[in-house]
Amino acid sequence: MQVMIRSRLRPEHAQECLSSLRAVYDELAALDPGGLRWAAFQLDDGVSMVSFVEFAGLPGQAPHHRLASFQRHRAALDRWCEEPPVVQVLHQVGAYGFPEPIGRQAVSQAEEGTP
Image 1 (spheres, rainbow, N blue to C red):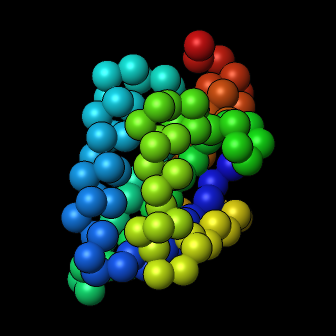
Image 2 (cartoon, rainbow, N blue to C red; image 1 turned 180 degrees about the vertical axis):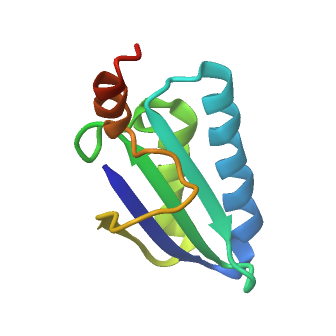
């Protein structure tokens, strides 16, 4: 599943949110749960954020949801945001230079006969 999450932070909470987000990435790097791609971007205005998340499974089952740092981040996010984050499911139309979506990798490898 591929999703995009958009949010707009309250300016006074932007740095606190970014620090919390970095803690989530640190925990992900330490635990390496696999089955997840996640990139977060801060836009030029300093308060708008866009994340792209890709994982195998259903919503709420992404590996980062089980991390303590993510649970703390998510618990504070509504307080940090001017409005609740908006999550949208993405349906890929085409791509150039991007890796195969998670889940399709296994299908492609099976078709090629690679483990």
